[in-house]
Length: 195
Image (cartoon, rainbow, N blue to C red; front, side, top):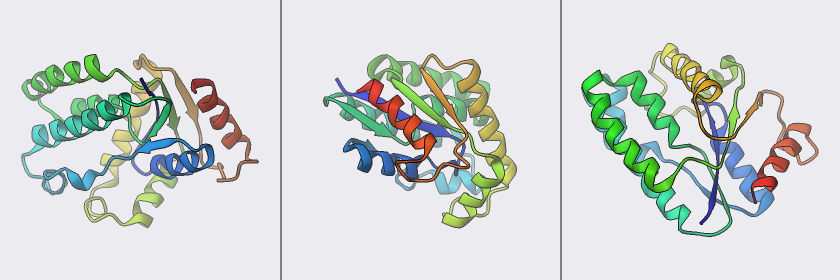
């Protein structure tokens, strides 16, 4: 069964960039989420009443990716953890909706488990917000940055105080994608320990 090493953090923290970099550097497989595969995400960001649908689709997409990954051997890098779905659900759902979501979430975790390691990226929010603006994803550019800041605060609090996963906290604001960079070596060492 493959070990899952997840890069996690707020939106625009650099998760996908670092997964791509380390997968290439270390010759590891990767799984990347694609928010555009969720048919509800544009309506969600536009303010439509599709919160439960949006969160359940993301959860089930992540479940499918992780189930397929766990069936392999070795270590696989991911630009998400299943626990992010729980954080989003807590932020976005009503009490009744959350109850429904949590039943599915518990089933998913029982079947695919949590990540074996989470490398939590924690740059200053100004950097994340600039990354969001620079990549210009249509469903993100018109969102109030306070929503992204709120999520960044919630997910950091979750991984500091609640997660049952081994977590490496990393301020990646000065991380340069160079194998000689001290933080790159620290992440590489953490990944190698899991292999």
